[in-house]
Amino acid sequence: MKLLSTLARVGGLRTAMAALALSAATLAVAQATDPAATVRGAVDTWLKGRYKVDEVRKTPVAGIWEVRIGSDLLYVDEKGQHAFIEGNLVDLKSNRNLTRERTDELLTIDFKELPLDLAFKQVVGNGKRVIAIFEDPNCGYCKRMRKDLVNVKDVTIYTYVIAILSPDSEVKAKKALCAEDKARAWNDMMLGGKVPGNNGTCDTQLAKIRELAEKLGVSATPTAFFSNGKRLQGYVPPAQFEKMLEDNSKS
Image (cartoon, rainbow, N blue to C red; front, side):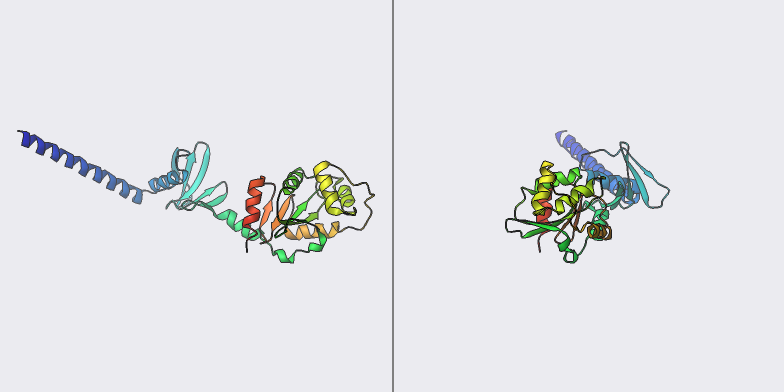
């Protein structure tokens, strides 16, 4: 009786294992033949448990599926390889933002072609890392970036002054550019609000800088260019800026 019961238990275990194997195989086949399952699985893997997929449904576009996470919508190809997320094309496996990479490529310039004589120059430390920045005297984020730059080591900064934000931007810009020490006058004004006391009637390069900005597509401040030509639009925190400066200063 014991032998028979043991055989029965073994038989039952084998049956259960076979059933599990069959279920796994069925699931694999289902995912291979059901795009919805493939899409859900790919997005779940990409999310890594941070959020839950609430719904997967077809769209009117062949091969594109809608994935709903709460009230947010993603659009994923039926193979679960790429997704449109907030207007950006993302590689789900590598988590690369392909739209951002392409945009960065299009916005990259040839740094060597910048007319550096239109900017004023500051050298900190050995100055081995080089950056060019377009700033407006009334730009709040420019002031924050300028404050951060005080603590950046071993950098050469070329500052292009443009007047685009406020009616008195040009007045302040001219006063800074007419100062004997442009770099010091600019820092004093941006960091301490001290506008130079001169009359601001000297010849400046503001018109040419404005033309240069238009040519480069600079329409907001601050806009910075690293020595490899990569563009930074807007303000980023100090640690992030330092990493970007270091990464984009490598040969």
